[in-house]
Structure formats: structure tokens, C-alpha cells
Length: 295
Length: 319
Image (cartoon, rainbow over all chains, first blue to last red; front, side, top):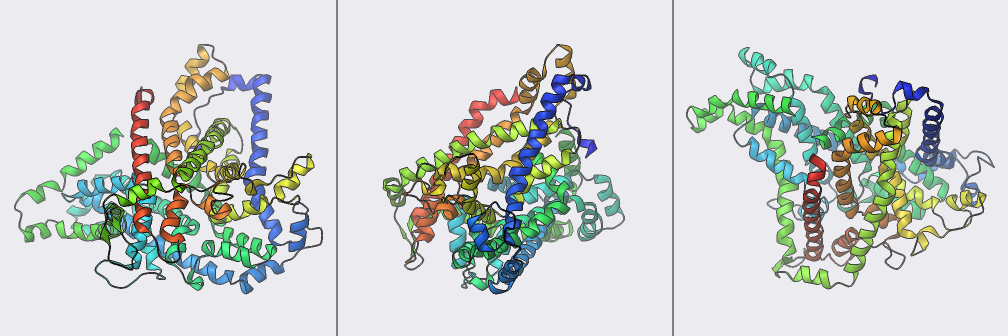
């Protein structure tokens, strides 16, 4: 973290002035308190209420366990409300989307950046165009395509492929990986070519091992995006037994008591929050988004 | 940027001569054309099927009457005029604009102020950014449904309990035509502001330290440095985050869909919700022509808006 310290607006000399010290320092302390209350507060409330009896949450939402803890909420949610099943559905959907996104981004980025056939420029242009097309334009035609695919006369509704494959069409991923490959030293590729490495060996033995950082970024964001997705799986997965947890939650809300529902929501947050804590630097360095915007 | 384009130029020079010798299918395959195509294939197939083809298909569908039951028929611009004359459309447009405007008022200055303050934190800066970003990783459905519990309009709702401590309320929140939309924007800002904070923090690392020193030498105080150095240095990023936020909020769907289903009395009916209703809201079969027509009109408006925006701010952003 120390390497990316921003240019200092406030010089050390200014920090020594009591007005700056208490003024800015106080503002920062207030900000920290606000961030704890606003950023963490709702999640702490969710965690608390997930193990509080429903009646207590309804009548005294801000009280801390007035009548003890109800661990049973979590078990009810996992077993009786089938959150366990939806949880694993979400995992399977996320892993498939991750695999497709990684395959498309790594091979596509490699072809566009290293192999560079004559049409690479055209393909890059077409990829960039899709970045400017708002997602709303794709929703309906994509749905129709899943229901009535051209050429193949077989509906993909209720098939996980209907979620996995469209996830791969992320121009952002491909451009991110391509840019990373653009910055790899060309001398290595040349040396490998002289040693007789073909494009496949070059890809698997040289480029992939060097590109762990960018593939890590793509992976983390792919899994998180899949975990957060709602509308698309709602449209194409109509069988409740196949749906991910996000799609099930609104239904669970209308059919279960509040405590169990909050426990289910708490379970839905576990993977993203744990992933965020483990891979913090991917998110907070801003390497993905910030870099894309600056460029 | 210069370093990258240098490498691109150098790299481009390497494989090129192989292609130029003779162009028969065999020499093409031997020269690496086939393997390049193999590596391109996953991307071309996935983007072709799930991005480029649907984009073209949208335009076709907007000119057709399609309901998946009967064969599609060409109807010219009928779908567009039907959407324009739909009494719901002006309501949806007005509400979407209202949402976008409120989201700018709430959501635009706060992340900027927070980021500027955070970048001057000397200890435990990681905690600040982690706490700010935490809501962004929460699944949006959980965020909305959790806030729906918070917004409970009874006197024992979470927010009403907290406000009751200082003798305010109870407020009806989502049940009130007047307050439903601001409530949606509040949750949306909570859920998204962290991402913007991180972008600003990254941009702040790019501010030239010498400018601050020069300003200090000239006797500038803290506020002057913020106004004269920090904000002008960030203006490129500020302009981009603003247009991205407008493009994002113009397509708001999840909040009105899950919080209020467009109610009360259409107070939170947005364009995206109307598109959803056209296509998927009717169990007897969707009106996909109108849905695609409206989505194209929204996309067209955003494209024109972005162009005008970029034109209007060009002199200001590059200077």
C-alpha cells in the first residue's frame, strides 16, 4: 500500500499547525465513524438479526438480543427453506461463468495482443463498440435468443449454459487482459519462438504463467458479478430448484418469517464478504476500474 | 500511454512479414493464421452470439410485431409510436430523470469529498477504503431487501426507531408517493458510492506533488489547494464518472422492481421497469417489439446525450 501513497495535499509543515491537525484530523475521525456506521452498520444489523428471534426483530429492531439468540434461524433457512440448495446453485453458476469468462478473455486477449492476425484491429474495434452499448439493449433479444436460438431448435431456458455463455461476452475483460499482454516484454516471445515454441506452447508455458495478476483480477470480478446477478438468471432459470440465491430471496421473503429470511440473506452475503476480505487489494487498488477510466 | 503504443508498434512489426509472402490457404495456416483463428474462436463465438448478434437483432425486432407465438410481421415504426403514445411513457421518463438527478445530488459530491479526505489519512488508510467499499460487494438483491426492512413504515421500523430516538417520524418511506423515490436513491447511493470512492482515490495518486508544493510556496491555504490543484487535476476523471453514473442510473431497474414494483401510484415507474413490463410483465406473452423499441430509444438518447456532453466539456477536460 505504501507505494501508492497519493501526492500530499497537506504538507508535513501544515500538519504541524494545530488548526489543520484538529480540523482535518477531526474531519477524518468523523468520516471513519460515519463509514463504520453506514458501511458496516447495516451488515452488523443483518448478522445480529439473522440470529435473533423474529418477534424481537419486529418489535425491537435495534435491541441486542433482548430474549436470547436464535441460532435455529440459520438452520431453518439452510434446511427448511432450501437455502443450502440455492447456495450451491449460485456456486455452480459462478464457477461456470468464471470458467467461460477466463477462457474467452485469456485466449481472446492473447490472439489480439500477441498473435495479431490481420483482422485483429477490426475485432478490437467491434469489442470496443460493445462497451458503448448499454446493457438494456441486449436484454430482450438475448432472452429471445435463449428461448428460440437460431440454427439450433432447442430452447436453453432452464439450462445453466444460458447463464454461463453470455457471461463470457465481457469486452471489459478482454480489453483488460489484452492491455496486460501488450505490456509483456516482446523479447520473451521472440526468444521462445526462436527456441521453436509454437503459439500453443507460447500461450501455456510463457504467457499464462506471466499473467496471473490480471487473470486474478478477472476471476475475482467474474465470481462477484455472477454472485450479484439477478435479472438475467431470473429470466432464463424458471425452475425454482435451479435458481441462485439472489433470485430466490424475494420469494423467500414473502413465504417465510422475518428471522429466517434475514438468516438466508446473511448466508447470501457470506461468500462475497469473505472474498472481499481475502482479495481486498484487487478491489481497493482500483487497478481494474481506475486504469480503464484513466486510459 | 506512450509506452504502450511504442510496444504495440514494435510488436506489430514482428509477425507481419510472414503473412505478406504468398497468400494461399496453406501458407496462411502455416504462417500461424489457423492457430490465431483457434485462439480467436471462443471470443468470436461468444461475442457473436451474445453481443453482436443481439445488438443487430434489437433493431430488427423493434420494427416487427413479435410475440414468439405467431411469425413476426414487419410493422415499420408502429412500435415506436405506440411507445411514445403510451400514457405510462412520460411518467417513466420523468421518474427516471428524477432518479438520475437525485442520484447525482446525493451520490456525486459525497464520494469526492470522502476520497479527498481519505487520501490525506496518515494511518490505517486501508480501513477507510475497505469500509467504504464493503456495500459494493453485497449482492444488490440483499441490499435492496435489507433496506426494505429498514424502511418499514411502522413506528417500530428500523429507521423509524432510530429517528424516534430524536423524536422524529415515523415516516412512511416507500409507501409515500413523495418519499418513495428519494428512498430508492438513498439505498442506491449507499450501494454504489464505494466504487466511485476507489476510482477517485486511484486518480488522486496521479496528482502531481510538485503542484501542491508550488501552490504552498505561493502561499495557498488548504481550501485553495483543493480548489485550485486537486479538483482541476481530477476533472478528467470527474467528467467520466459523471457520465457513467448518468448512463447507469438511466437504466435503474432493481431498486424500483424490488422495493416498490413501480408504485405507489407509478411514483417509481422507470423506463427500464416499463421495458420489463412490455416484455415480461404480461403472462399471456410479451410485446417484444415495444420493449426493444423503448430500449433503443433509451440507448439512442444516452448516445446523443453522451456525445453532446463530451463535446460540451471537451475544452474544459483536456486543457
